[in-house]
Image (cartoon, rainbow, N blue to C red; front, side, top):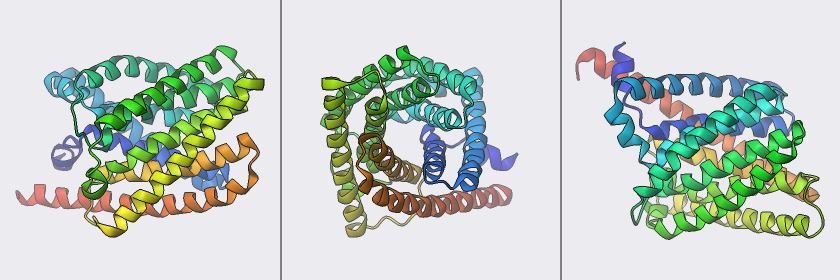
Length: 317
C-alpha cells in the first residue's frame, strides 16, 4: 500500500507512454513472426493499460480537480493513443469486438481531451505537444486496421479523415515545439518523430485499402512515403542528439522514446508491405530490435525506480 501511495499514484499522465511503447513493440514482433514474444509483450501492455485505466477512473471520481488539471495537458492524450495501440494489436488477433469497443472508447476520449489540450496550448512546448497528432493518427490506424479486417467501408473514410486531421495537427504542433528540447529533453522530444511514424503507419493502412485506387492511391502512397522519410530524418537527428548530449538518468518520459522507436520500425515494415518496396523490410527489422533493446533498458529503469520509491516509503525518507 505504501508503494502504491508513493509511486503509482504519483505517476504523471505521460506514464501511458509505457502502454503505447509495449503495445507497438508487440505489434512489431507480430509483423516479423515472433508471436510468442509478441503475446508476452501484449500481456504486459494489457496489464499496464488496466492498471492505468483504474487509476484514471479513481482520479476522475475522487480527485476531480487533479484530473481536470492533468486533462488539459498533452500527456493526457496518451490515454487515447494507448487505447488505440492496444486495440490495433487485438484486431490483429481477430478480437474484433474488443478492438471495436476500444476504438469507441478512444474516440470519446479524443473528443473530450483534444479540445481541452488545444485550448491550453502555449509556445515553446516540449515534445509532448505532438501527442495531438499521435492520438489522432492512433484513431486512424485502429480504424484502418478494423476496416481491413471486417471489412467496413465507413471505417476507411474515418481513417482518411483522421489521417488528414493528424497531419494538420502535426504542423500546428511543430510551430509550438521548442527545438532546444532536441538537446535537453528527458525523452519526449522523440515524439516529434514518433508522430510522423504513426502518421506513416496510418497512411500505409489507407494505401492498402481497396477503397482508394487510381489518383487517390497514388496521392496517398506519395504522402505516406514522404511522411516516412521525414520520420527517418527525425530519427537520425534524435539519435545524433542523444550521442552528443547523453541523458542516461531514468525518467518516466523515456517511455516516450521507446514508442517512437518502435513505431518507426512498425511504420517501415507496414509501408514496405503496402507499397511493395520490399527492401524496406530489412531496415524495419533492424529498427525493431533496437526498439526492443531500448524497451528492456527503460523497463529496467522503471523497476528500479519503483523499488527505490518503495524502500524510501518504508524507511520514511
